[in-house]
Length: 437
Image: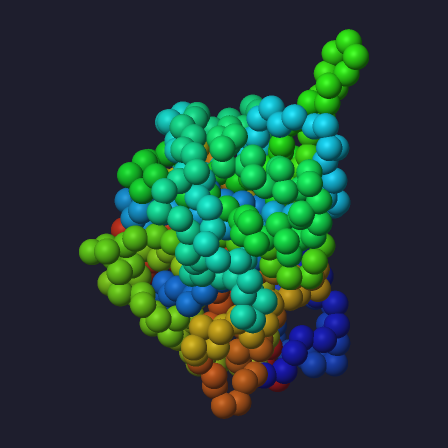
């Protein structure tokens, strides 16, 4: 298939009917179109195949967020996230006359939440029994470390991720006094020595709650284990503090999130391997996306080569994929994002490249033309991808996948209507220029 050379000045508007032929009244072309009968064909009858698969694992140790919480989802089951992290200090110096007053784990909100924050939530703080150290220097959403069976403390609270700066969790003095004394007496002077006494914490939600998953920052300026102490003065005591925090400048992972969903007995229960694809026809005419856990939507166009049956020689001018989330699948507690990443995977669902066009990386973006009626859908420009597919010899079994930004540090989820949906089927709208020599 030849590419279109020259500048096309097209003044006619195209409607998205199934097939439309239209003569081009105004056209400035290169040599390939000289003395040719040029027409536009708009086709939206190509088959769009949607399937769901699940990545075996996602790197969560590169995240800037501690993600903690749990909720129940009609499509994705019990969704939960548990954080693990170790602590260190800039220097290990506490005045010899300091008197410990209190200890608090201060978790700075970073503004992220998913699901209902009006319900009472619970965080259990456990002491780690093994160091935050990965064999390959990476922790995944499936990773876990052993921790004590009894929590150091349990904190029940109403999350306020956008209304408060931080959540304060009071730590029992008996738990932290030994560590404070050892630092004060210069028996602990390094990160290694502090890990011998305190390997770190894990923050675990209640397995029964249906509240929200909350994001806390790893920034040492707002998230830290703080020892409040006072130094006796002649007239009044001086109040000071000593902080342990998550050191993000070591080059090694010091924290990660274990993110999972229990879909036992549900539609997604069969996705036990990354190479398994669940067709939308077998999942209620839906396809699914879920950050953190690893679900993604795979999109294929099995009848694309039928374009060769259109008489004449031509080229793709425009190609837009439209896919729609059901109105009932999202709300203020379960929002959908304005844009999604678009990439290519091979037959084993391994990401191979990002789709780009003249404007850079391609994204799926929401069209809100009728948003007041909740009639929103995603549009994805796919000209460069389809040109690449049609040019491949031999054909390869790759596909487009879409998933949210911040895929490794959120639990954002999206439900999409697939083939057979009575409301809205995924649709590829292709504009094709044909010239007969």
